[in-house]
Image 1 (tube, rainbow, N blue to C red):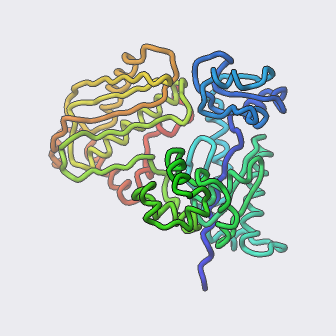
Image 2: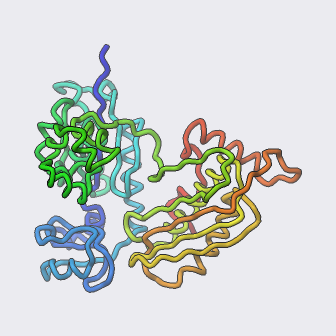
Image 3: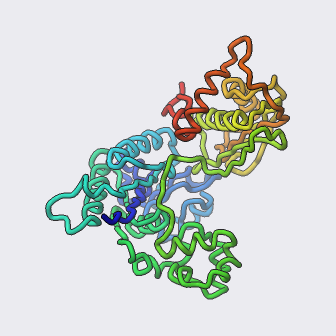
Length: 407
């Protein structure tokens, strides 16, 4: 029996922050809305309604510029991350009931793998397996709307990239399934910039070479693409042809790591840029804890301990601070986190929202694998790390990194 084509769904909440604000205040429905701060504030736009987009207002631009472009009737609102986070978690809980494999991409976006699920959901009247999956995804978006009051859109394709592009085409409040083999027909006429992995700089270089659309990328000579996209040229081209990656796997940190066992050179570091600038203390605390957990896991994987811990903090206006402290050698997040928390409290001298947090371990040295005379948690960490190596890093996490709120 032939295997069915992969069916990856990119599920995205439409104008998420604006939609939540309208849910809490129905008077905003139909009005132009900008979320990110009050009119005239310094800061960045995090979400805009469809009514204000024709005026050129976009997420990521300064609030000052948005105020210049937006009509006078536009309502400017500050962000409420804790409120949005609650709705985001409820959105994920609904979506996870539909497929055995899912992956969170951001606060308002998920990938769901429906490959092989047609037998589970098939119903009389479905023309084929694609029609079955499309019907189920529409049911999912309807459930999100009915239970949460939030509009969502979904794209379905044979790869993550095609599903992502399709979700954009489906907006607002739509579902679009791109059948296997029809990728170029459906998305090929879009600008190359619409395809994940092609940024504005690459777009300009591709245009200079006469490559303007996704179909152009799919059909371009590989050497010409390599001049612009380098080592990613082949994978991007395969994606444009509908042959991109479809494996979701576990939710992974958005960084590449290389930790050769026993290596004491350099540092072990991880940092994370928030999707939207953050003020919420609970969100900040969870991120600090998560970063401590990650770097310490990597230290144990190398077989080293660290004598120095460094904190990196970047504000929304890009002011960047670093603080370092020498400690008793350790590779335990339970020892590193209090140090990091203390440095953060001393370093944060402004009430400006935070854009990035990072933690580094340095002055590394090998540690003795032999169990110590007194319990220092080594046996526990060996058990935890063993489970992670077999089942993935996220198989076990500290409760603090997963809780919605930290009191």
